[in-house]
Amino acid sequence: MQRTPVLLELGGRRRRLSLDLNALAAFEEKTGHGLEGMRAATMKIATLRMMLWACLLSDDPTTTIDQVGSWIDLDNLAEVTQALSTVLSRSMPRPKDGEETGRPTQAA
Image 1 (cartoon, helix red, strand yellow):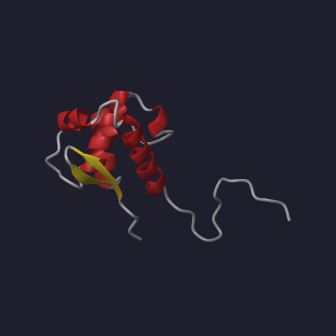
Image 2: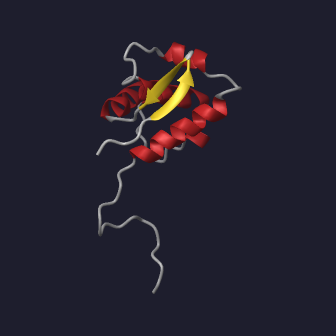
């Protein structure tokens, strides 16, 4: 199932963020880290920039890490962080019917 893309205005145009397998691999190759425990709200700035770069590769594979860094400043940092939080949460596997969600269930 195709998930709704996350769109973000960066570098003078609207860009699509996608956390597909290629983005995950690019992030992992550059940082040596996977997504375990990853939250955009608590990422270090360098990690946030690297995650954003990886998520933008499907939109434009020629995008560089330095370009991404030049598109982020204190004026749009909260918006960028929110967009990354959204793409991270949308990319997590959805439980199938009857699977455990990890959330407590209510007693009847």
